[in-house]
Image 1 (cartoon, rainbow, N blue to C red):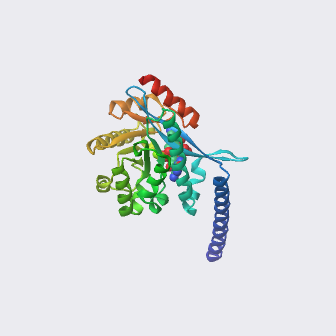
Image 2 (cartoon, rainbow, N blue to C red):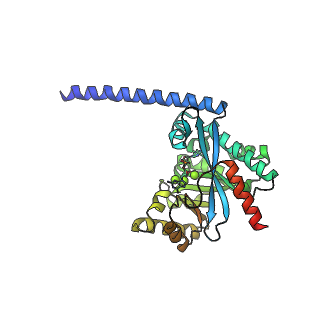
Image 3 (spheres, protein in one colour):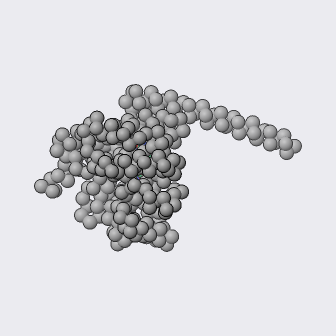
Length: 281
Ligand code: C2E
Ligand code: MG
Ligand code: MG
Ligand code: MG
């Protein structure tokens, strides 16, 4: 009976897998159509200094304006794109779109802060520094205005390649941040060798601050470690004033989160850039 039941379970599992594969195939087809049909857009979330609330940068966050579905968040399609390989042309598109936008802001005299682009593990594995730099060159965007966000996992998948690509990019002036820091599998000996400029403390740790002892310990330790390694540090997912107070007290002055600004369309991001120029004039 056990064997029979096991057999049934396997059959059920197969059917489930089949359904999931079909579902992924359908999304992959829709994604490819969406790229041609210009259904992707980029929102920009500000990175803010807690010292004077000045704008210090943006993170570019991909959105899919899918007909009859509304604005689809990346969590619903990036994993599929990563699996099918579509993330490579899609990731190129995001970098190109961000460079196009920076070019427009340069021409208007507004570009003054870097925009960070998320680079997925597969995308990083399949591209060289030159591939990325060619996209910047196409729009005449200086490397200092672009930052790449990569995860520890992306680096660990092919360490030699990652060290080479990120090293070359950093040497050219492109900033490189480790995203979701603390959630991945890299060790401190790798971190020491990684050509990066910034650590982004993952939201899951920031969430528990200041009241959860473990989170408070982890966050303050990451901040101290970044400082000792000569890296900048940004706290992700800051939603409440008491989180900001804790971060500031521990000398993390750069934050990104609902508290200081949601991801917003390019037009709204441009207003923030214009304000910044006016404030500095
Ligand atoms: P991420 O790179 O860690 O981006 C930060 C995510 O946290 C964003 O979610 C942002 O909207 C969200 N967030 C920011 N502040 C807060 C806050 O205060 N509270 C909460 N609850 N959330 C906050 P989003 O836009 O849904 O993106 C999710 C993930 O999708 C990103 O995580 C990134 O891994 C991936 N992603 C987004 N755009 C791209 C892209 O262009 N390429 C690639 N490869 N991945 C992308
Ligand atoms: Mg990111
Ligand atoms: Mg992150
Ligand atoms: Mg995160």
